[in-house]
Length: 133
Image 1 (cartoon, rainbow, N blue to C red):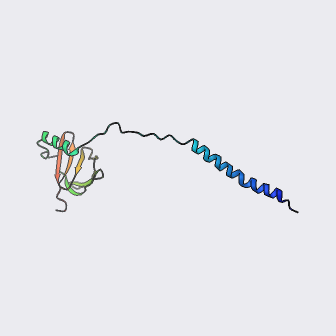
Image 2 (cartoon, rainbow, N blue to C red):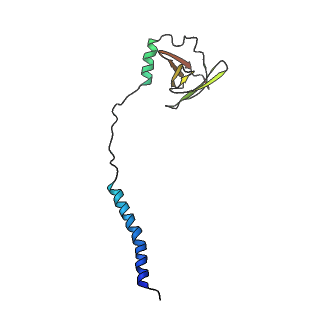
Image 3 (tube, rainbow, N blue to C red):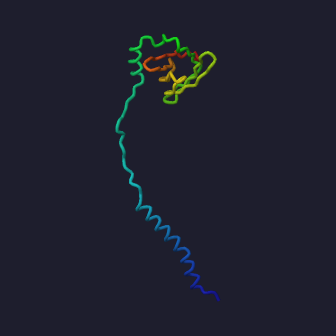
């Protein structure tokens, strides 16, 4: 006949070992929790793009007089940091996002419904936005 005492201890051992290992693992994980610390932003920089562009525009009275900047606005996507424009010069079209440079020279500064502003060092170049008007 089959020994039921042996079967009882075998099943108890079969379930007790994994349960005790899971409990030990849980205790070990609760003891070794990471220490999450708060951090503070050290330097808060408030960049006002409109004010800086206006001050630079006052310094440069001839922002649109440069003949080398002859781009035509084909399309734009206004928005925050993901704004972009499509400009055309002769037969070439360029897609430029905010902060990127057009032909490695003119950096796109601002895109809104009225105008598009590029910067080349100290000079500002404005393109009037006539797309869809």
